[in-house]
Every structure is written in structure tokens, then in C-alpha cells.
Image (cartoon, rainbow over all chains, first blue to last red):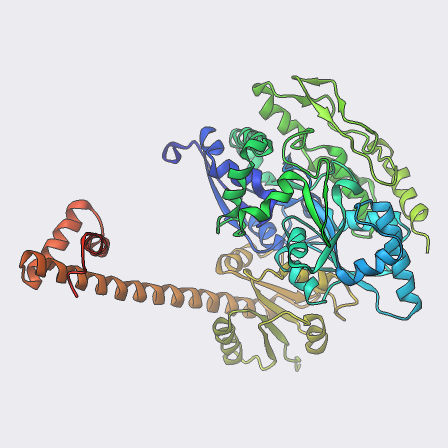
Length: 414
Length: 200
């Protein structure tokens, strides 16, 4: 099929399970059926993905949700204008901690139920106990400063009264090295996507303390970042790709296909890890460590709940966190850049001909849905949420100034 | 005016390539070159070395960690500007194509950095070329061995001379538009499947 392909598209990805929708689009023929010859390149760092997008080696890539914002805001070197017409899923991350930290938290009331408030209170008590004893602050790792991992870890800690900039240290570690770094005692905990949390649990060197799906349910994670110059010149190729990704995502969500998807991702060119390791993210059934296990609702959604829709409110929430932690100054110009980065209009125009369910708006109030809710949408059968933040906060993208003004002073109490 | 020599830090897990780059930099008159293969404890090393230029291979998975460290002023005394000068697109492309990335101390003039980056790029390319040539030689040797075995099988099973056996292999390869090594490999595999190795 590729010999007659209308569109040649080259894409980069990192070896993480949430690249699955992109990988399956290439491996299982969804791209070819849309007339696309899709070439996938595995990369070793987000910096490489950024660089190769900037110089045109890649047309698009699997990216951290805040990364295109960071590019457009000029926070990284070699940034090129990058847009987001598609989200690769919701959820999928965990916070994993060492056995020693878990023992310390358990002494302060933590139980293996993943409840962010309870776990955070216990961690806070442990941190203050350690500080009083003159011990070094705990060191947590995330994969990148401009990542959902960094922002949700900080959000969780701050909402539990822990100042993530002062009371702990946050370092950067590549995902495949997390479990080793934890086992070797170089870090005390980390926030990363699967399978790198289950890896520590399986090795007996870590406990999962809480999960993204409970800190902020149905929250954004990875996206498809597209070099804007290419998107502008190749609207048909992009629309074809978005249709291929849509079909791929629907296939990835179906439990009947999980075995096959796990086998594809297990291949040496993708994750290179046994299929069994891919199953927790697909089933939401996680071993937490010490024999505890739990089924987590909406742990990772590659398709359901409008998971692929690039909500502007998701981008804007990332922006508020960039401001909160000093990554960028809040100015009208920066806000405008953040508002323009995610492109639901491109998603709509590509998928409308398929008659699929599309949300009625481009932005939503995040954290407002307490239960799963059928929404008025074009097409049939679109259900959103619940999408609550664990601390009951609401993010209204129309009230950004108030949200930014409120978040530091209200939550960090030392 | 006497300029202080630039301190260059090369981070590369590939020891051979790192040595080639280091040699190139020294030949070009850079005396303050440090090579690191393992990034464990790198923050302390950077604080000690205070590099003006950091050269790192693109395959290194620790680039995100390093970039973050460069941005935190408490980790390094002097801010490290990212990558090469943004205006020089050709240099950036050449570097990424070669598989190398460079970071320079803020304020360092472009003309002092460019020769170092150019050197790194050319040495990276030379290393890739060398590795490729080595691989070609290896596969050439491999292919010759297989052809010899295939000739042996033909000579024994069909009573051909060595020359006739080779001609038959070559003709078959030409007819099928395949490499002679591939034809020889098929024959050796088939002979192995059909019975006791006939060339032993």
C-alpha cells in the first residue's frame, strides 16, 4: 500500500506506552488506509524530538502535553512553532516511592488506597519529621520540567500543604532509568507513565502512592505535536493522519484488542518489554506494592471520554502551572500564545466527515463534572468526565487571572 | 589580547568516539578538554570543570536532565545558553545530522564556538563513516565465507569445478536480480535443511 501512498509522514516517538495510538496507526494499517506512508522513529530524549521537529526531520511527534506550549513560548532552545491537533489519551501516570518512604508514610497513616489527600498528608508529616531531624529533603524525579508529570506532582504536593520548590528536591531522570534510580537510592520517588511504575513494584523496590487518574481524573497527558509550517502547507496530509489516529485510538481502547496491542508495543523497535508488562495500563488493574492491588477507574483512556480532543482548557491549565512554578511570566502575549497552541478546529474539520461525536465547545470548565455526563455534541454518544481535581478545585479557563492569583497563596502553607 | 583557553566538556558514552573528538580538539589547540562517559554525579563535575562549551551525543538519553540542570542557576555557576547560536541554521542542521549537540556558556561569542562545533561535527561524521565501513568490511568477509561454502556444496553435489560453481552462483544471482551472497546463503540454508552438511 505504501508504494501508492499519497502522503509521506515522518513521526518521532519516545518508548512509552502512551505512544500506542501513533504506533498502532503505523503498524496496523490505519495510516496506510488513509493513503499515508507513516515512518516512525524512536528517540532517546524529548530534546531530540524537539530538535528534529525544529530542523524538519520530523513532521510531527509524540510529545508531552506542555511541550508544544514551551516551544511556542520560547522556553526551550531551538524551538519551532508547534501545534496540537490531537491528544493521545488521558491519564496513565503514577507517583511511585521507595519502600523506605512508604514505610515512613504508613507510620503517618498512609494506606494502600491511592487516595491523594491521605497519601499527601502522610507524606507531608514524614517530610516535616525528616526536616526536624535535620535530614536531607526527599528527592523526586520527573521526566521533564515541562511535563504533565512535573505539574501534577507539584499540584498534588502543594494541595497537600507541601511546597514542592522548597521542601523536596525535583530532578529529571529519563523514564527507563526511573526504577533503577529508585532501587539504587539516588531518588526517593518519581512521577512517570507506565510501565515504569509497575516495573518498580514488580522488582519489589517501590510502592505506588497515588495516580494521575485520582489527582485529576481524565486529565491530559501526551499529544501529537505538529510542526506548524508543515501543517500549514499540508492540510490534507494532516487531516488524513488525524483520521488514521482516530481509527487507531478507537481500536486501542477496545479490550478485545489489548492482547494484540500489548504484543505490538512489546516489539524491540517500540518498548522492547514483555507484553505482560503492558497490561496494567490497559486494564487499570495495578499492583501497588507489598501485595496490595487495585482497579482504577479511567486509569488510562486512549479514546473514550473524548480523549483525543485537544481541549484549549487543557493547554491553558498547563499554562497556569507554568506560571505557578516560575517557568513563564503571565502576560497577555503569553496567554495568547498558550490559547492558540491546541487546535480543536483542525481536529473537528478532519473528523467531521466521519460523523463521529464531537464536543460542542473548544474549552470546558475543568473539574466541574462530578459524574460521567452525556454532553450535547454533534454525532452521538459522547460522554465526558468525571473530571474532578482531588482537592475539589475548579479551573474555569475564562477566569485565568483569578485562578493564577489564587493558586500559590491559597495552597502553599508552610 | 590574551584569551583564556576555553574549557570543553565532551559527554559521550561511546569511548572510541569520545577519544576521537578529544584528539581532534587537542590537535586544534584546545588544552582544556574533559571527557565524561557516565553522567552519574555530573552536576558536581560541571561545577568543578566550569565548561564554556559542552558537547554531547544525541543518542544520550540524559539530554533532558542536562538541559534542565543548565537552566537551574544553582546547579551551574554561569548560565549555559542552549545549543548553538539560533541564527546559524546550517550549523544546527549539520550538528543534528551528525548526531551531536552543543551547549555554550551565555555570552560566549559565536566565532569562538563555531570551530569547536565544526570539529565535533566532522569527527562525529568521520566516526560514523568509519563504523559504516567497518560494518561493510565485516559483511563482505561474511559474504565471502558463505560463497565459499556454497561453492563447496555445488562442487560436491554436482561435480563442478570451483570456477564453474562460482559462475553458476553468479548467473543465478543475475537472473534473479539478487546479490550473490544472498543466493549463496539460500543454498547453504537449503543444504542444511535437506540433509547432513555436504561441505563438511
